[in-house]
Length: 197
Image (cartoon, rainbow, N blue to C red):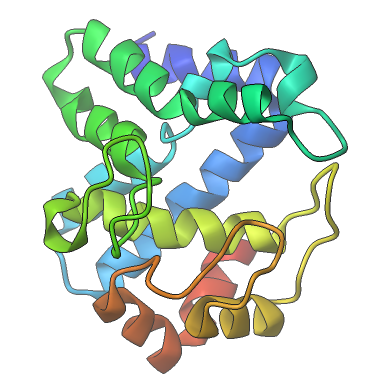
C-alpha cells in the first residue's frame, strides 16, 4: 500500500466525515480542472491532491473536530494548524508525487485578498492547485451537513460563493480566484454534477 492509499484509509477509519468530504472535493477538483482544459495528468494530480487536502485533521483532537457549537479561540488555532500538519505529513512521506498534495494541504485556506492562513498569501502567490481546491473545498463544505450547520442547496451555495455572502463558513468577497468564480458562474451545473457523483 502506498502512502496516499494508507493516509486515505487512515482518514476513512478515523474521520469518516472528513474522508467523504475529501472524496467530494477530489471529484470537484477533477471536474473543474478538466473543464479548464488542463492536461489529463494534471487533472488527476489535482484530484489526488484534493483528496488529501485535510489530512492534517488527523492530528486535531476529535473533541474539537466534532464540537457541535462554536469553537473557542484556542480550538480555532488547533483547527487552523491542520494546514501545516498536513503539509508536514505529506512531505515526510518523501514521495515526489505527493509534493503537490503537500502544497495544497498547506495553502488551501489562503485567500485571494490575502486574508487567509497560514501565510497570508495573496492572489497569484497562492499556488494554482490550492486556489482551485479552495473553491471546491468551500463549495463541498456548504453543501454538506455538519454538526454545526444544515446543508445548503446547490443554488444557495453558488449564490453565496458568487456574492461573498456569509454562510456559516466565514465566507466573504475576495476569498477566491475571480477567474475560477467566473467558471462557476458560467457553468454551475459542473459543480452540481461533480458533487453528486
